[in-house]
Amino acid sequence: MNNTVNESAIKKLKLLFTVVDRPKGEFYLDVISEFSVNCQMVLPGQGTASSELTRLLGLEPHKAVILSVVREDRVEEIMNCLEDKFRTIRGGKGVAFAVPFSSVIGVNLYQFLSDNRMGREASL
Image 1 (cartoon, rainbow, N blue to C red):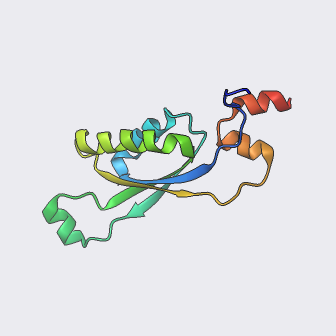
Image 2: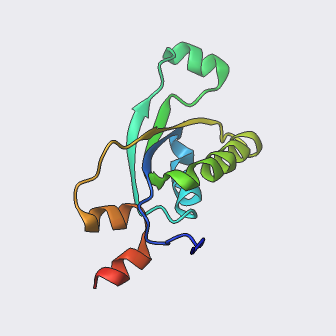
């Protein structure tokens, strides 16, 4: 019996939401990219606190909402990295959470989103 894992096996995907101050958006986009994430999108966001409260507390009201499609087996590692950055980067606080994809239509799309290079090469 062969106990090796098939590298081209189906791996579940999750959508990772990362919300950070807008000036730190590019930094966190690069951090997440280091985990072989092929699909990311940054959307502008607005904090919910009043402008007077944000001024008093020195908060950045403008947010970057980063949507990243990641393989489920990499989520924990990415979240640990983000948690570390949130604690150690000056002005780098944020929120991150992941939700599962229910389905993806199309083999090529799935292979791109999951960074499944072996699967792409095998299908050529």
